[in-house]
Image (cartoon, rainbow, N blue to C red):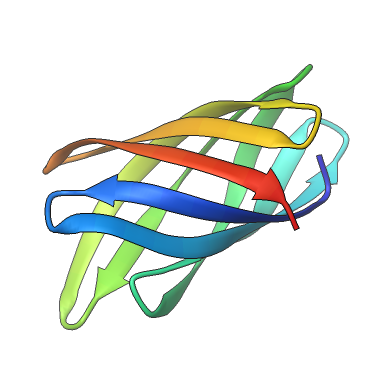
Length: 96
């Protein structure tokens, strides 16, 4: 699961482009999600087969939006959903 993925995220204000970088050690996942013009580091995520889950905060200007993302990697394709207080944000991407 290690690597960087170019992503799009459907947000309440429209489609946003960014990247997710994963670093896997055993079944523990860490990395960063660069979206909405900020870098958002996460750790203590989980990997089970091709499925992943991680939590963090998306920083947008002075706002911090907590989220939990769950998804799958299928070959070079990433699909996920980030659960936030603004609803579920769909994430799609491809290995960079």
